[in-house]
Length: 235
Image (cartoon, rainbow, N blue to C red; front, side, top):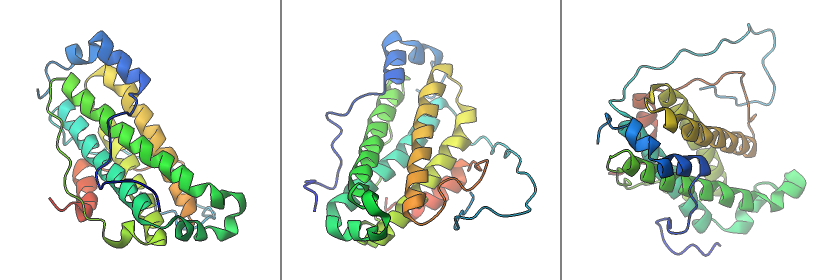
């Protein structure tokens, strides 16, 4: 068992991403945003044969009123992921989790540490997005209450749910990013998106799926993402 002491994650000593910190320090983000408010299933390891060439997906509809709304949308998803990993890593016995990967050789001993890195990334994303909302004159949305059921107790279910959540997060960033108005926010947003994609690939592989099933990922709209995430949100 890990020695996490609470259901809520600690943001107190997390670093701020360098690119975003620079934008905040210069005041460029706040100035530019003054007008703002305040998938592929990939269930096998074999690529399909004799399929037509893929084409990039179209953008999803714009469902955002401002950059603050986009940031709070992303913040809500990062709350969900950070809380999920925090609870799961605390609740699930380390040996039981490692037994899921007995056939994997050396990676068996590394899985838990890698999952802790993913957890810490999500906590950092929460901190950075919350500060960014404030920097552009908005009010950070409060974390909802979450219920993950047995997904934060059973090792196999934990890994499968983590893979699903990471895929949702990647598609959410891809769907929202085209509608960011403030140029200085684009690079930090893309830097989070690429890390979430790395998480998704890793968790897919742990779940017995191919980590990169297609040449293009489909973005999801805000309404599609929130419908999927709502199954974990109590309030």
